[in-house]
Amino acid sequence: MSLPVVILAGGLARRLRPMTERLPKSLADVAGQPFAIHQIELLRRHGLTDITFLVSHLGEMISATLGDGARWGVRLRYIFDGHKQLGTGGAISRALPELDDPFFVMYGDAYLECDYGAIAHAFLASGKRGLVTVYRNEDRFDRSNILFADGRIVRYDKQHRTREMRHIDYGLAAFRKSAFRGRTEGEVFDLAAVYEDLLAHDDCVGYEVPNRLYEIGSAEGLEDLRAYLAAKGTSA
Image (cartoon, rainbow, N blue to C red):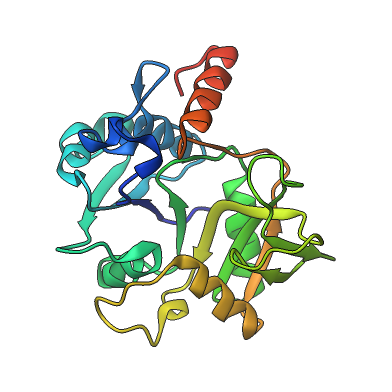
């Protein structure tokens, strides 16, 4: 079972400057090839072949490098934010008319080895408008921001974290388009606001992933993934 995938790749990547002043984060070199190719090949191995990049900062470089995806046996599309940064939630909201329903969302700096088919099945079976994957982080890779208990997300809050929070947003979510209902065109907002709204209405399911996440959002994360892939002896 598969869903189309939306990749959020429009951020300014300030933590990776000066590299990202001239190169989008998605094209950062990881094990000899642009990071986005690792994402595409990982998704393809899981049967996910319909991929849309939401781009803004230096987005033309991403589309020029990756093309239509034919060389990997996938379909790639690109949707641009426009004249201003809309935030992760705003970028998705703006792109909704061009997206299929429902869909996965993942971050443009995330390398996630997980069971995408099982996650899609859990989402569709739940009948909810949203799903958030979580990982038991214990503040190891970042500050934990989710209270997850008995298979439920009790609280999701990036701003007011508590000691009881042991989990973190893993970086993969699933939505029905209706999850973004009520947002105005061009509104700037973070995807976390959608999570919080859905959870407040008991309209979001949590899914715990056992595998740790890798990301290239920071110099440390970039080197961590480079070492991980080198140790695996793979370029994907």
